[in-house]
Image (cartoon, rainbow, N blue to C red; front, side, top):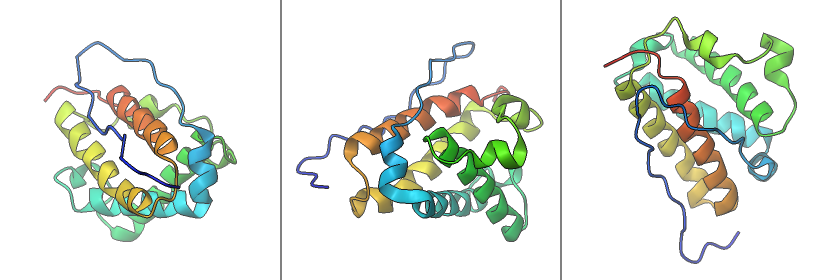
Length: 154
């Protein structure tokens, strides 16, 4: 890919209580570009960041269990990007709101979560592993998805 001047916009959408903006699945080209292994590496970086973040208490406290959770999440993102439906095959329908209900996900926790995702995406951007259009599409999805997961007040 050739990025002359970056047009990526990683602005974090503001959270407005009671409003769930429409979400659009990422371009399948993102997964095509980075491959399943690239998605698994992305989620490994992401979960490593979460493990060291201020919201680490929401996640498993053992690094091996945390990495396994990252791979389950990778299954979800591979599927949501149009790849093999590993998540459905291994865990059933995503129903992410229900799966996250036991955890108090506040607007502040959401910000830490999405900042870790931005950090995890940096090698893909720096190494130009995907087009800006596909990276932006993935970012736009997780930006809105993260709002949908908020289930608690500050």
